[in-house]
Length: 471
Image (tube, rainbow, N blue to C red; front, top):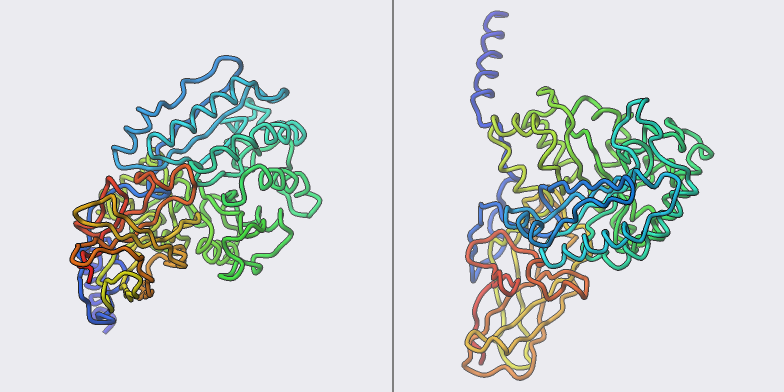
Protein backbone atom coordinates (compact mmCIF):
# COMPACT_ATOMS: atom_id res chain seq x y z
CA UNK A 1 0.00 0.00 0.00
CA UNK A 2 2.80 2.38 0.87
CA UNK A 3 4.45 1.70 -2.50
CA UNK A 4 1.15 2.34 -4.28
CA UNK A 5 0.72 5.66 -2.46
CA UNK A 6 4.23 6.71 -3.44
CA UNK A 7 3.57 5.74 -7.05
CA UNK A 8 0.32 7.71 -7.01
CA UNK A 9 2.11 10.79 -5.66
CA UNK A 10 4.82 10.48 -8.30
CA UNK A 11 2.18 10.30 -11.02
CA UNK A 12 0.51 13.41 -9.62
CA UNK A 13 3.80 15.26 -9.63
CA UNK A 14 4.60 14.15 -13.14
CA UNK A 15 1.19 15.30 -14.32
CA UNK A 16 1.57 18.65 -12.57
CA UNK A 17 5.05 19.20 -13.99
CA UNK A 18 3.80 18.37 -17.46
CA UNK A 19 1.08 21.04 -17.34
CA UNK A 20 1.79 24.58 -18.56
CA UNK A 21 3.27 26.63 -15.73
CA UNK A 22 0.80 29.46 -16.43
CA UNK A 23 -2.35 29.64 -14.29
CA UNK A 24 -5.35 31.06 -16.14
CA UNK A 25 -7.10 34.31 -15.38
CA UNK A 26 -10.24 33.88 -13.23
CA UNK A 27 -12.81 31.50 -14.69
CA UNK A 28 -15.32 32.96 -17.10
CA UNK A 29 -18.78 33.56 -15.70
CA UNK A 30 -21.91 32.83 -17.68
CA UNK A 31 -23.38 35.68 -19.71
CA UNK A 32 -25.09 37.86 -17.05
CA UNK A 33 -27.60 39.47 -19.45
CA UNK A 34 -28.57 39.23 -23.14
CA UNK A 35 -26.04 41.11 -25.26
CA UNK A 36 -26.89 43.34 -28.19
CA UNK A 37 -23.20 43.45 -29.06
CA UNK A 38 -20.41 41.03 -28.17
CA UNK A 39 -16.72 41.88 -28.16
CA UNK A 40 -13.63 39.82 -28.87
CA UNK A 41 -10.65 40.01 -26.52
CA UNK A 42 -7.35 41.35 -27.84
CA UNK A 43 -4.58 38.99 -26.70
CA UNK A 44 -1.71 41.26 -27.79
CA UNK A 45 0.54 43.30 -25.52
CA UNK A 46 -0.16 46.93 -26.37
CA UNK A 47 0.59 50.30 -24.81
CA UNK A 48 -1.55 51.62 -21.99
CA UNK A 49 -0.68 54.52 -19.69
CA UNK A 50 0.64 54.10 -16.14
CA UNK A 51 1.32 50.36 -16.26
CA UNK A 52 3.67 47.64 -17.48
CA UNK A 53 7.40 47.17 -17.83
CA UNK A 54 9.45 50.29 -17.28
CA UNK A 55 12.66 51.36 -18.98
CA UNK A 56 15.32 52.79 -16.61
CA UNK A 57 16.62 56.30 -17.30
CA UNK A 58 19.21 56.69 -14.55
CA UNK A 59 20.96 60.07 -14.40
CA UNK A 60 24.01 61.05 -12.32
CA UNK A 61 24.65 64.60 -11.11
CA UNK A 62 28.18 64.47 -9.75
CA UNK A 63 28.89 68.15 -10.05
CA UNK A 64 28.50 70.84 -12.66
CA UNK A 65 28.72 68.40 -15.58
CA UNK A 66 25.17 67.42 -16.45
CA UNK A 67 24.17 64.05 -17.89
CA UNK A 68 22.52 63.81 -21.29
CA UNK A 69 18.79 64.48 -21.10
CA UNK A 70 16.28 61.94 -22.36
CA UNK A 71 14.99 63.47 -25.58
CA UNK A 72 11.41 63.29 -26.77
CA UNK A 73 12.68 61.19 -29.68
CA UNK A 74 14.36 58.66 -27.38
CA UNK A 75 11.36 58.51 -25.05
CA UNK A 76 9.06 58.13 -28.02
CA UNK A 77 11.18 55.19 -29.15
CA UNK A 78 10.59 53.53 -25.78
CA UNK A 79 6.86 53.97 -26.22
CA UNK A 80 7.12 52.57 -29.75
CA UNK A 81 8.72 49.45 -28.23
CA UNK A 82 5.55 48.94 -26.18
CA UNK A 83 6.33 50.68 -22.88
CA UNK A 84 4.75 53.77 -21.39
CA UNK A 85 6.67 53.97 -18.11
CA UNK A 86 10.16 55.33 -17.51
CA UNK A 87 12.10 54.83 -14.29
CA UNK A 88 13.67 58.24 -13.71
CA UNK A 89 16.25 57.80 -10.95
CA UNK A 90 18.36 60.86 -10.23
CA UNK A 91 21.58 60.38 -8.26
CA UNK A 92 22.39 63.85 -6.92
CA UNK A 93 25.77 62.70 -5.69
CA UNK A 94 27.48 66.05 -6.12
CA UNK A 95 25.03 67.90 -3.89
CA UNK A 96 25.53 66.29 -0.51
CA UNK A 97 26.48 69.61 1.05
CA UNK A 98 24.90 72.20 -1.23
CA UNK A 99 21.66 73.11 -2.94
CA UNK A 100 20.80 71.86 -6.39
CA UNK A 101 22.04 74.15 -9.11
CA UNK A 102 19.72 75.90 -11.54
CA UNK A 103 21.26 73.79 -14.28
CA UNK A 104 20.06 70.62 -12.53
CA UNK A 105 16.57 72.03 -12.10
CA UNK A 106 16.45 73.11 -15.75
CA UNK A 107 17.58 69.62 -16.76
CA UNK A 108 14.69 68.09 -14.79
CA UNK A 109 12.18 70.44 -16.40
CA UNK A 110 13.37 69.48 -19.86
CA UNK A 111 13.37 65.78 -18.96
CA UNK A 112 9.74 65.80 -17.87
CA UNK A 113 8.56 68.18 -20.60
CA UNK A 114 9.78 65.62 -23.14
CA UNK A 115 7.54 63.01 -21.52
CA UNK A 116 4.45 64.91 -22.62
CA UNK A 117 5.49 64.89 -26.25
CA UNK A 118 6.52 61.24 -26.20
CA UNK A 119 3.39 59.89 -24.45
CA UNK A 120 5.14 58.39 -21.42
CA UNK A 121 5.20 58.89 -17.65
CA UNK A 122 7.81 58.30 -14.97
CA UNK A 123 8.30 56.48 -11.72
CA UNK A 124 10.57 59.00 -9.97
CA UNK A 125 13.27 58.51 -7.33
CA UNK A 126 16.09 60.69 -5.99
CA UNK A 127 19.09 59.28 -4.14
CA UNK A 128 22.62 60.24 -3.12
CA UNK A 129 24.50 56.94 -3.52
CA UNK A 130 24.31 53.91 -5.81
CA UNK A 131 26.62 51.74 -3.70
CA UNK A 132 26.15 50.31 -0.21
CA UNK A 133 29.82 49.42 0.36
CA UNK A 134 31.50 50.99 3.38
CA UNK A 135 34.01 52.62 1.08
CA UNK A 136 31.13 54.38 -0.73
CA UNK A 137 29.95 56.33 2.32
CA UNK A 138 28.31 58.74 2.85
CA UNK A 139 25.16 57.02 1.59
CA UNK A 140 22.99 60.09 2.08
CA UNK A 141 23.06 63.60 3.49
CA UNK A 142 21.54 65.36 6.48
CA UNK A 143 17.81 65.80 6.89
CA UNK A 144 18.26 69.57 6.74
CA UNK A 145 20.01 69.47 3.37
CA UNK A 146 17.52 66.92 1.99
CA UNK A 147 14.62 69.13 3.03
CA UNK A 148 16.23 72.00 1.13
CA UNK A 149 16.47 69.77 -1.95
CA UNK A 150 12.82 68.75 -1.63
CA UNK A 151 11.82 72.41 -1.37
CA UNK A 152 13.74 73.12 -4.57
CA UNK A 153 12.04 70.20 -6.31
CA UNK A 154 8.53 71.17 -5.24
CA UNK A 155 7.84 73.49 -8.21
CA UNK A 156 8.97 70.74 -10.59
CA UNK A 157 6.82 68.11 -8.90
CA UNK A 158 3.88 70.49 -9.09
CA UNK A 159 4.36 71.52 -12.71
CA UNK A 160 5.07 68.05 -14.10
CA UNK A 161 2.81 65.89 -11.92
CA UNK A 162 0.84 65.06 -15.05
CA UNK A 163 3.72 62.91 -16.36
CA UNK A 164 4.70 61.47 -12.97
CA UNK A 165 3.02 58.16 -12.17
CA UNK A 166 4.38 57.83 -8.62
CA UNK A 167 7.27 59.27 -6.59
CA UNK A 168 9.31 56.75 -4.64
CA UNK A 169 10.37 57.94 -1.19
CA UNK A 170 14.07 57.79 -2.08
CA UNK A 171 16.69 60.15 -0.59
CA UNK A 172 17.34 57.89 2.43
CA UNK A 173 20.18 55.39 2.18
CA UNK A 174 22.09 53.82 -0.69
CA UNK A 175 19.93 53.57 -3.81
CA UNK A 176 17.26 55.57 -1.97
CA UNK A 177 15.90 52.33 -0.50
CA UNK A 178 15.97 53.43 3.13
CA UNK A 179 18.40 50.96 4.66
CA UNK A 180 22.14 51.71 4.30
CA UNK A 181 21.95 55.20 5.78
CA UNK A 182 24.24 57.59 7.63
CA UNK A 183 21.60 60.03 8.81
CA UNK A 184 18.30 58.21 9.44
CA UNK A 185 19.12 55.12 11.53
CA UNK A 186 19.40 51.76 9.79
CA UNK A 187 16.91 49.88 11.99
CA UNK A 188 14.37 52.38 13.32
CA UNK A 189 11.84 51.01 15.78
CA UNK A 190 10.51 53.74 18.07
CA UNK A 191 8.59 56.90 17.13
CA UNK A 192 11.75 58.84 17.98
CA UNK A 193 13.76 56.66 15.59
CA UNK A 194 11.31 57.55 12.81
CA UNK A 195 11.26 61.29 13.50
CA UNK A 196 13.63 62.25 10.67
CA UNK A 197 11.97 59.92 8.19
CA UNK A 198 8.59 61.32 9.19
CA UNK A 199 9.81 64.88 8.62
CA UNK A 200 11.04 63.94 5.15
CA UNK A 201 7.76 62.23 4.30
CA UNK A 202 5.80 65.28 5.42
CA UNK A 203 7.94 67.43 3.15
CA UNK A 204 7.40 65.10 0.19
CA UNK A 205 3.65 64.89 0.76
CA UNK A 206 3.61 68.68 0.66
CA UNK A 207 5.90 68.99 -2.36
CA UNK A 208 4.20 66.37 -4.54
CA UNK A 209 0.61 67.24 -5.57
CA UNK A 210 -2.09 65.49 -3.54
CA UNK A 211 -3.23 63.48 -6.56
CA UNK A 212 0.06 61.57 -6.64
CA UNK A 213 1.35 58.91 -4.25
CA UNK A 214 4.67 58.48 -2.43
CA UNK A 215 5.90 54.86 -2.41
CA UNK A 216 7.96 53.40 0.46
CA UNK A 217 10.15 50.31 0.35
CA UNK A 218 8.85 48.44 3.42
CA UNK A 219 5.46 48.01 5.14
CA UNK A 220 7.14 48.78 8.47
CA UNK A 221 8.33 52.12 7.07
CA UNK A 222 4.76 53.22 6.47
CA UNK A 223 3.74 52.03 9.93
CA UNK A 224 6.66 53.73 11.65
CA UNK A 225 6.30 57.00 9.77
CA UNK A 226 2.55 57.25 10.40
CA UNK A 227 2.56 55.71 13.87
CA UNK A 228 0.09 52.97 12.89
CA UNK A 229 0.02 49.18 13.00
CA UNK A 230 -0.32 46.72 10.14
CA UNK A 231 -4.00 46.37 11.03
CA UNK A 232 -4.68 50.05 10.34
CA UNK A 233 -5.09 49.55 6.62
CA UNK A 234 -6.78 51.59 3.94
CA UNK A 235 -10.41 50.77 3.21
CA UNK A 236 -12.61 51.50 0.21
CA UNK A 237 -14.00 54.48 2.14
CA UNK A 238 -10.58 55.97 2.98
CA UNK A 239 -8.84 55.15 -0.31
CA UNK A 240 -7.78 57.63 -2.96
CA UNK A 241 -8.02 60.62 -0.65
CA UNK A 242 -5.44 63.24 0.27
CA UNK A 243 -4.58 61.84 3.71
CA UNK A 244 -1.03 60.60 4.26
CA UNK A 245 -2.26 57.04 4.75
CA UNK A 246 -4.16 57.07 1.44
CA UNK A 247 -1.18 58.57 -0.40
CA UNK A 248 1.68 56.39 0.88
CA UNK A 249 2.14 53.53 -1.60
CA UNK A 250 4.54 50.60 -1.92
CA UNK A 251 7.52 49.46 -3.94
CA UNK A 252 9.54 46.25 -3.71
CA UNK A 253 12.99 46.00 -5.27
CA UNK A 254 13.54 42.32 -4.41
CA UNK A 255 10.30 40.78 -5.66
CA UNK A 256 10.06 36.94 -5.39
CA UNK A 257 13.73 36.86 -4.41
CA UNK A 258 13.54 34.77 -1.22
CA UNK A 259 11.14 33.89 1.61
CA UNK A 260 10.77 37.52 2.76
CA UNK A 261 11.87 39.31 -0.42
CA UNK A 262 15.25 40.18 1.14
CA UNK A 263 13.88 41.96 4.20
CA UNK A 264 10.79 43.48 2.61
CA UNK A 265 8.51 41.57 4.97
CA UNK A 266 9.20 40.85 8.63
CA UNK A 267 6.11 38.68 9.22
CA UNK A 268 2.79 37.60 7.75
CA UNK A 269 1.10 40.78 9.03
CA UNK A 270 3.32 42.82 6.72
CA UNK A 271 2.13 40.76 3.78
CA UNK A 272 -1.49 41.07 4.79
CA UNK A 273 -1.12 44.83 5.06
CA UNK A 274 0.45 45.24 1.61
CA UNK A 275 -2.03 42.77 0.13
CA UNK A 276 -4.91 44.94 1.34
CA UNK A 277 -3.42 48.36 0.70
CA UNK A 278 -2.29 47.66 -2.86
CA UNK A 279 -5.95 47.45 -3.83
CA UNK A 280 -5.76 51.25 -3.59
CA UNK A 281 -2.10 52.27 -3.81
CA UNK A 282 0.49 51.41 -6.42
CA UNK A 283 2.92 48.52 -6.14
CA UNK A 284 5.90 47.95 -8.41
CA UNK A 285 9.67 47.61 -8.52
CA UNK A 286 12.07 44.90 -9.60
CA UNK A 287 13.48 41.48 -8.80
CA UNK A 288 17.03 41.14 -7.42
CA UNK A 289 17.91 37.42 -7.53
CA UNK A 290 16.48 34.28 -9.09
CA UNK A 291 15.96 31.35 -6.69
CA UNK A 292 13.49 29.17 -8.59
CA UNK A 293 11.84 28.06 -5.36
CA UNK A 294 10.46 31.61 -5.09
CA UNK A 295 10.47 33.07 -8.61
CA UNK A 296 8.88 30.16 -10.48
CA UNK A 297 5.77 31.07 -12.44
CA UNK A 298 3.24 29.72 -9.94
CA UNK A 299 4.78 31.61 -7.01
CA UNK A 300 5.22 34.72 -9.12
CA UNK A 301 1.57 34.73 -10.19
CA UNK A 302 0.45 34.30 -6.59
CA UNK A 303 2.49 37.31 -5.52
CA UNK A 304 1.58 39.49 -8.51
CA UNK A 305 -2.10 38.89 -7.81
CA UNK A 306 -1.87 39.20 -4.04
CA UNK A 307 0.07 42.47 -4.11
CA UNK A 308 -1.57 43.91 -7.23
CA UNK A 309 1.57 44.68 -9.22
CA UNK A 310 1.43 47.53 -11.73
CA UNK A 311 5.02 48.09 -12.93
CA UNK A 312 8.27 46.13 -13.18
CA UNK A 313 11.84 46.85 -14.24
CA UNK A 314 12.48 45.55 -17.76
CA UNK A 315 16.26 45.54 -17.26
CA UNK A 316 16.76 43.90 -13.83
CA UNK A 317 16.93 41.10 -12.73
CA UNK A 318 17.20 39.43 -16.11
CA UNK A 319 17.93 36.02 -14.55
CA UNK A 320 14.44 36.07 -13.05
CA UNK A 321 12.98 37.11 -16.39
CA UNK A 322 14.79 34.14 -17.96
CA UNK A 323 13.09 31.78 -15.52
CA UNK A 324 9.71 33.19 -16.55
CA UNK A 325 10.56 32.99 -20.24
CA UNK A 326 11.73 29.38 -20.04
CA UNK A 327 8.57 28.44 -18.13
CA UNK A 328 6.31 30.22 -20.59
CA UNK A 329 4.74 32.86 -18.35
CA UNK A 330 6.81 35.97 -19.17
CA UNK A 331 4.62 37.36 -21.94
CA UNK A 332 1.46 36.87 -19.91
CA UNK A 333 3.01 38.55 -16.88
CA UNK A 334 4.02 41.70 -18.72
CA UNK A 335 0.63 41.82 -20.44
CA UNK A 336 -1.26 41.69 -17.13
CA UNK A 337 0.84 44.12 -15.09
CA UNK A 338 -1.51 46.79 -13.80
CA UNK A 339 -5.03 46.98 -15.22
CA UNK A 340 -6.27 45.27 -18.37
CA UNK A 341 -9.94 45.93 -19.07
CA UNK A 342 -11.82 43.54 -21.36
CA UNK A 343 -15.39 44.15 -22.50
CA UNK A 344 -17.45 40.98 -22.99
CA UNK A 345 -20.72 42.38 -24.21
CA UNK A 346 -23.17 45.28 -24.05
CA UNK A 347 -26.88 45.96 -24.27
CA UNK A 348 -28.68 49.21 -25.17
CA UNK A 349 -32.20 50.10 -24.11
CA UNK A 350 -34.02 53.06 -25.57
CA UNK A 351 -33.79 55.06 -28.77
CA UNK A 352 -31.08 57.50 -29.82
CA UNK A 353 -33.17 60.68 -29.81
CA UNK A 354 -32.32 64.31 -29.06
CA UNK A 355 -32.72 64.91 -25.33
CA UNK A 356 -33.84 61.32 -24.77
CA UNK A 357 -32.56 58.56 -22.51
CA UNK A 358 -30.35 55.62 -23.46
CA UNK A 359 -29.60 52.87 -20.96
CA UNK A 360 -26.27 51.13 -21.48
CA UNK A 361 -25.32 47.90 -19.74
CA UNK A 362 -21.74 46.58 -19.90
CA UNK A 363 -20.16 43.28 -18.93
CA UNK A 364 -16.45 43.67 -18.35
CA UNK A 365 -13.52 41.98 -16.68
CA UNK A 366 -10.23 43.36 -15.41
CA UNK A 367 -7.81 40.54 -16.25
CA UNK A 368 -4.84 42.56 -14.98
CA UNK A 369 -3.23 42.20 -11.57
CA UNK A 370 -4.25 45.65 -10.34
CA UNK A 371 -6.66 48.51 -10.82
CA UNK A 372 -6.10 51.98 -12.13
CA UNK A 373 -4.47 54.00 -9.33
CA UNK A 374 -4.37 57.66 -10.31
CA UNK A 375 -7.71 59.40 -10.79
CA UNK A 376 -9.07 59.20 -14.31
CA UNK A 377 -12.49 60.33 -15.55
CA UNK A 378 -14.80 58.13 -17.57
CA UNK A 379 -16.98 59.66 -20.24
CA UNK A 380 -19.34 58.59 -22.99
CA UNK A 381 -18.76 60.08 -26.42
CA UNK A 382 -21.16 60.31 -29.35
CA UNK A 383 -19.55 61.07 -32.70
CA UNK A 384 -21.32 61.50 -36.03
CA UNK A 385 -19.87 58.69 -38.14
CA UNK A 386 -19.90 60.81 -41.30
CA UNK A 387 -19.16 64.22 -39.76
CA UNK A 388 -16.67 63.65 -36.90
CA UNK A 389 -16.71 67.34 -35.96
CA UNK A 390 -20.18 66.68 -34.52
CA UNK A 391 -19.15 65.26 -31.20
CA UNK A 392 -20.84 65.11 -27.79
CA UNK A 393 -19.22 64.23 -24.46
CA UNK A 394 -21.37 62.91 -21.60
CA UNK A 395 -19.45 62.73 -18.28
CA UNK A 396 -20.01 59.59 -16.22
CA UNK A 397 -20.09 59.46 -12.40
CA UNK A 398 -18.22 56.15 -12.50
CA UNK A 399 -14.73 55.92 -11.00
CA UNK A 400 -12.94 53.26 -13.09
CA UNK A 401 -10.49 52.66 -10.23
CA UNK A 402 -13.26 50.54 -8.69
CA UNK A 403 -12.67 47.82 -11.30
CA UNK A 404 -10.17 45.65 -9.43
CA UNK A 405 -7.72 43.20 -10.93
CA UNK A 406 -9.03 39.67 -11.46
CA UNK A 407 -12.69 40.65 -11.05
CA UNK A 408 -15.69 40.71 -13.36
CA UNK A 409 -18.37 43.40 -13.37
CA UNK A 410 -21.74 44.35 -14.78
CA UNK A 411 -22.09 48.11 -15.03
CA UNK A 412 -25.10 50.05 -16.22
CA UNK A 413 -25.78 53.73 -16.69
CA UNK A 414 -28.61 55.76 -18.18
CA UNK A 415 -27.34 58.50 -20.47
CA UNK A 416 -29.17 61.77 -21.01
CA UNK A 417 -28.65 62.34 -24.70
CA UNK A 418 -27.70 65.72 -26.13
CA UNK A 419 -30.10 67.85 -28.11
CA UNK A 420 -29.22 68.40 -31.74
CA UNK A 421 -28.86 64.78 -32.82
CA UNK A 422 -29.76 64.50 -36.49
CA UNK A 423 -32.51 61.97 -37.27
CA UNK A 424 -31.25 59.32 -39.64
CA UNK A 425 -27.59 60.05 -38.95
CA UNK A 426 -25.33 57.29 -37.64
CA UNK A 427 -23.42 57.95 -34.42
CA UNK A 428 -20.57 55.99 -32.89
CA UNK A 429 -21.06 55.45 -29.15
CA UNK A 430 -17.70 55.23 -27.39
CA UNK A 431 -16.19 55.03 -23.93
CA UNK A 432 -13.24 57.27 -23.17
CA UNK A 433 -10.94 57.16 -20.16
CA UNK A 434 -8.71 60.19 -20.79
CA UNK A 435 -5.99 61.51 -18.52
CA UNK A 436 -7.22 63.66 -15.65
CA UNK A 437 -4.68 66.44 -16.29
CA UNK A 438 -5.75 69.40 -18.40
CA UNK A 439 -2.39 69.21 -20.22
CA UNK A 440 -2.99 65.60 -21.34
CA UNK A 441 -6.75 65.01 -21.45
CA UNK A 442 -6.95 65.65 -25.21
CA UNK A 443 -3.87 63.55 -26.01
CA UNK A 444 -4.94 60.04 -27.12
CA UNK A 445 -1.50 58.67 -26.15
CA UNK A 446 -2.60 58.99 -22.52
CA UNK A 447 -6.08 57.46 -22.93
CA UNK A 448 -6.89 53.95 -21.69
CA UNK A 449 -7.37 51.29 -24.34
CA UNK A 450 -9.69 48.37 -23.66
CA UNK A 451 -8.27 44.94 -24.51
CA UNK A 452 -10.69 44.27 -27.36
CA UNK A 453 -10.19 43.85 -31.07
CA UNK A 454 -11.44 46.52 -33.49
CA UNK A 455 -12.49 48.87 -30.72
CA UNK A 456 -9.77 51.42 -29.91
CA UNK A 457 -9.13 54.40 -32.17
CA UNK A 458 -5.51 55.47 -31.77
CA UNK A 459 -6.11 58.89 -33.30
CA UNK A 460 -8.97 59.77 -30.94
CA UNK A 461 -8.37 57.64 -27.84
CA UNK A 462 -11.95 56.33 -28.04
CA UNK A 463 -13.15 52.78 -27.39
CA UNK A 464 -16.03 52.46 -29.84
CA UNK A 465 -18.81 50.21 -28.50
CA UNK A 466 -21.32 50.37 -31.33
CA UNK A 467 -22.89 52.52 -34.03
CA UNK A 468 -26.50 53.68 -33.56
CA UNK A 469 -28.88 55.51 -35.83
CA UNK A 470 -30.60 58.62 -34.44
CA UNK A 471 -34.39 58.70 -34.58
